Image 1: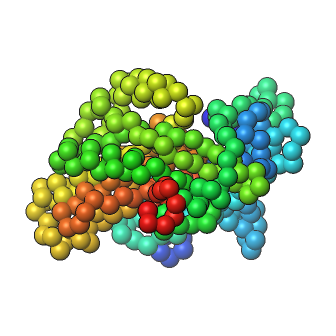
Image 2: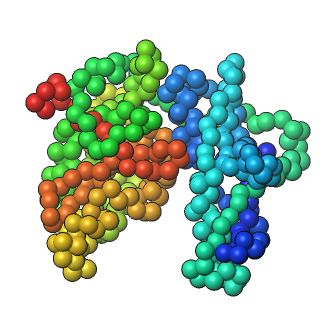
Image 3: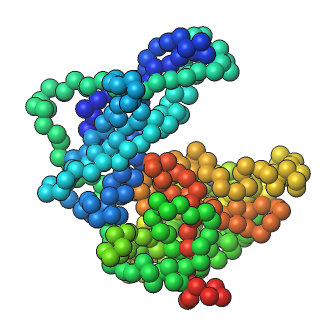
Length: 344
Ligand SMILES: [Zn+2]
């Protein structure tokens, strides 16, 4: 991991009577938060798109309790010749680790199943490894961010908004053919998860201090092993995608992946009624732990997105888009590109 950790974080667990049960070190994946923090500042032109930099995870002390109690953490990134930048993350980001710690205490019978618990996050200075000499490591963090120049205004003029937009998200544009092809592929695969790799470009609008993404094509994943619940990309999928991308010769990059959720099949096998399907949590904006694992492994950069084609029995096929917002995968809005914003 190319991040440095001057502090170690831990979770202090309390039972429903506020009695302290113990302290457990936090083992967590910091990379999606780092990726988000880095891209956040790159979008604003406060951090170069490539080059060496130093990044560390630091505690944000709780204002009332003070050290070692934390109200969150920040990721500080320092690049040569620029003043360091940071992004703050709330204590909530430890919630899922607190749940893991809680189940540990349940196993040890220090906490009852279903008992209300609370937790605090603490941080202590980490002992320097021998040979560090106290200096920060300087590392190339991630591949350079491949960005061309374009006008956000001209994209917005051609874009039709889909889904709920959050002003903190990178603007995202999708060519209509991508959705048409995903729709056809999903419908032809009846009840089996199918998908493809999204390619396109990243653009910077210097006048707006913003980077945005354009998904130009999808490469159907032809060599995946899929069942009705899971799609996995094989080495042949990647070889085929790489070949297709090179053949197009437009210097496109991987922007994420799409896959279908054959909800009608899941519901049929569980014998759900049509009414139950309408409120089924899998029918819309559902991104499974497996889906997150694919993003994390194959598309870890902060600008990468995951598109889900929801194939349900009660309505036409719909799409849900997901992206890294503050270090976690969240539903997000996007724009479908047309010739103009009228009549598209
Ligand atoms: Zn899925």
